[in-house]
Length: 262
Image (cartoon, rainbow, N blue to C red; front, side, top):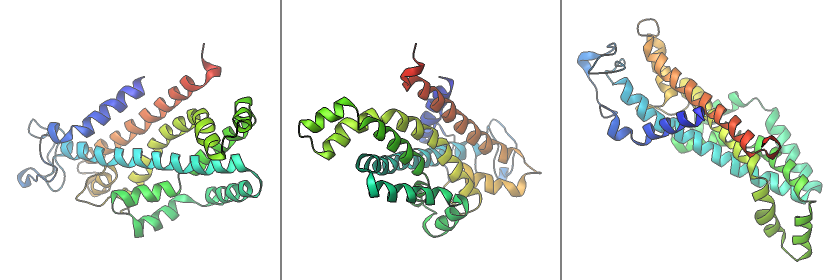
């Protein structure tokens, strides 16, 4: 519940940032560069005179959008692959699962950096790059659930009544396999935010002047000894966001698991 509360606050802050941010995101105060927290700038300013609080709020819009979009896209792609693999089985199952094994064996960060170098820089590009290496776990989860469910009585009854394979998959199997997918997608949001932050920190993610927590950390590294708060605030936001999604995902897993209900 605490994780869910933090997520609600973060999402509300990101959505309402144009109204609650003290300045426009491109506002520059050259007379107060690298200033400490004050009434005028509650969290201080960066090396260009941007208000740090404003940049954090607008960066939250970008980082949360990347996290949610990549998690949803990965869940959809993994669900389709796992559903087809588990339902049809045979050679198609072997081909798809061996492809999943190959994808899981590839060291993702170097490949993500290479892909981000050519396809990143924009919101859509970063989401696509993260999705490319984020769907395999969901595919395995869904495949395992489908292998259990396709032999149950209600699936056999639907097949006996003449239901098409597509109807059986999407009307009977997917709704009953959604619980682990929802939990996996919730936990994946935090992982996607971390990946975006890492890519942006290395200079291959969201590019300035668009703020994200990752590129705010990158900009702050040159001033870490002079103004450590510049790195502290985006680092704290990444930490709190990932921790909140992990707690919320754990609680959601317990809530959706019938074996843990009392």
